[in-house]
Each structure stands twice: as structure tokens, then as C-alpha cells.
Amino acid sequence: MRRRITAVLALALALGAAGCAGGAPSGGEPAASAPAQADPGAVADLDCGDGELVSQEMSSGATWSMCWSVDPKRGLELTDIHLAPPGADPVSVIASLSISQLEVPYDTGERLTSDITEAGFGGSKMQTLDEESCAGDRLGADIPNVGDGTYGKTPHREVLCSELVDGGIAYHASDVAAPAVGRRTDWQLSSVSRVGWYEYVSQYVFAADGTIRVRLGATGDLSPVDHTDGDHGWPIGPGETAHAASHSHNAVWRVHWALGGPGGMAVEQYDAEPTGEHGEQSPIVRGGTAPIERPATAEWVDRRWWRVLAPEVRNADDHPISYQIDLERTDSFTFVEDHEHGAADGYDVAFTNADECQIFATRNRGTCGAGVPEFVSRGSDEPLDDVVSWVAVGFHHVPRDEEQSPMELHWQGFSLLPRDFTAQRFDVPKGREEVNGVPEGLWQEAAEELEN
Ligand SMILES: [Cu+2]
Image (cartoon, rainbow, N blue to C red):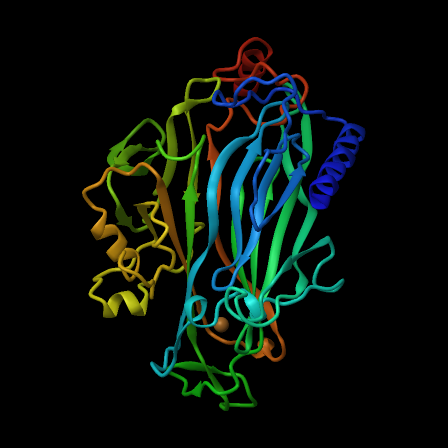
């Protein structure tokens, strides 16, 4: 309860600060699904169970709220993620979000770890934060030293860092019609887990515009026992000595969506292809979406992206609210485990219906399948509805001299972008309130002036 009050207090302070900074948000339209209430409390009223509620008002006037907890295997898990546009009620976005496997195969073929299912990011692997590792608020949780806490001690430790940072320029736009410059805040939630010689930062960045950036950072030390030759590593000692073995960090996150509420969702893939025809000035490219109706895996190609949408929940422009999965062009991979279990190709993203037994992307236990390719094939004749996205982001790590020692953090991840969550941006600056579609009046005159 104390945490809740602290969060609300922080919210009031943030509101005050936003007011002083000027540029008060005004134009964002609430998503149509939000039930009308006398007092649109921006913080979702959540029952977090064993977890804790955290919330943050952003520079745009939007408010994020969610529960956080620590799973012995998956480490930091965020649940019931809600986003309230400025002046509107919170809208459900994600039911649960966490990493679901981190596989590290060495190029020598001599080592393979599945860090989430073997070691885990929670329990004693999760590091206690201090002033150096967290410049924001350090939040505590009961972290069992052994398994789920049935045995051993369960100390209360500060393991979550909640940090509101300057996110740089949000927009910088034409001084012809209505000059506007604005900065934005980013809210970072992160934890640190030690697995072997590596230390991993699990980070989720909630941005003022509704974007969610999912990140895994790796630091610590290169393995002191994995050295090889020039074909499988890189010399990090003097001359041609100490070839540290190259390896991959194969990460998959599980995103269980609850866009506009649980279930009732759909998935689409967008593609755009050059037609081979040329217009007056440029090649003609044709693009559009196609439904992914049943569980499936998909691979990234140029110009391709996916979105999860709530067809029944509409913004003020009558567009279904959705979130886009943006892979930010990273290394593709096929899990070694999957390949050994008959999967011909890897995937960049896969879609399944939620099943509480389907938790780990590989080495999943139970009768519901050993990993994502099996989850997909088992569910392939049910229509997608209660959508889970499995997002795969790899990083082929060739060690560098500078990584001794310790290793500078290197990051891999992806973004989830709101697409049509609201009819306009959350924080419409003065003079742009009416811009929604083809702009009129002053804007047309300005456009004509620019053309001439
Ligand atoms: Cu590495």
C-alpha cells in the first residue's frame, strides 16, 4: 500500500513539473474503449497479487501503470501494463511481458547454455542495486534464495531500478505554420542478473509517446575459459594470442497482449514491394497488411513489420487500436535447441494463443510443447485471439580488446510502437490541435508558399 501512495505522490509532483514546463498536452483523443468516469484516474486500479504497482506520468501527459514481480527463472516480469492518454482512463495494453529464453552457443561448438531455464535471472542471480547501479528509485521485493521460496531464506532486496530520464527531442517542426519544439521523458525499469561471468541488464523503457522499448544489456567479463583460434574468435591478448571465442546471445521475449482488454485480438503483417513501375519521379511501391489468422512463425525482410490489433476497440478516427512490433534490424537466429528438435528455420517473431504452460521459448517443460515451433504447430488450427508474440533478437558477439575488463554494456532488443492508439499524438502543441488528416487553411497556404 505504501508503494501505491508513494507512486501517486510522485505522480502529483510530476504533474506539477509538467505544468511549469509549459506545453501542456491538450489534443490527444482518448481511446474509445475507456469507460467514461467522473474522475478519470490515470493510474490503473490493479490487483498486483504478490507483485507491486508502479506508475509514472510522462512529459506528454500520458500515464503508464503496471505491476512488477520477480520470477525465479524469467527474472523481472511486468504484468497488467496500462497506458492512459492525457485526460483519459487507462487502457490495457499487455497482460505480461518478460524474457522467455537466452541461449548462448559458442562458435567453437564446445559450449551451449540456456541461461533462463538453467540458471534463471531471478533468485540469488538477481543483483541488489545500489547508488552506482541505479540513479533513480530502488524498489524492493522478496527474493527467495532457493527456487520459489518453499526452502531457504527469502530476503527483501532492492532489485528494481525505476528511473525517469530525459529522452531528448520529441519533435521539432516547421516554423512555417505553427513552430513547435518539445522534449520528452523516458521511464526506465531495469534489473541486473549475474549468470556465470556475464551480468545482464533487463530493461524496459516506457516512452512518453506510448512506445515500449525492450532491451537486454550484457556486461561483466568475457568467459576466461573459452579461447580458440582465429577462425572462431578474436585475439584479445598481445599479438596473435588469446583468441576469445565468438558466440551468440539468442534472446526471445514473450509478450502476452491484452490490447483493450483480454482476448479478442488479431494479428497482421505489413509488406511493401516495388512494383517495377516508375512514376514521374520515383519507383512505385505497393504496400498493405495481410491477416495472420492462426498461430505462425514469421521472418523479417526489408520493409516488413507486424501489428497486434483490437478490431473492436477504435480510436476517435475509427481506426482499431494496435501496437506494432519493430525489430530494429538485428541478427536473426535459429535456436540450437529448436534446430535439434527438427525446426528447419528460425523465426524473428511468432504468434500463438496464450497458454500458461507455454512459458519458455526453448526447453519448456510440461505437456504443451518444448518450445515455440511446437507451440505454433500444436495450435495451428485455432484462430488467434488471446495473442502472445514471441520476439527473437540475436547478437553475434565477436570479442574486442576493449572488453578487458570489464566489458562495456552491449544491447539488443526491439520496440513496440503504438499505431492508432489515439487519433493524434498525445501532446499536440498549440496551433496544431485541428491537424488530423489533410490540413486546411493556413497549412495549405504555407504548403503552396513552400512549393513556389
Ligand atoms: Cu557475449
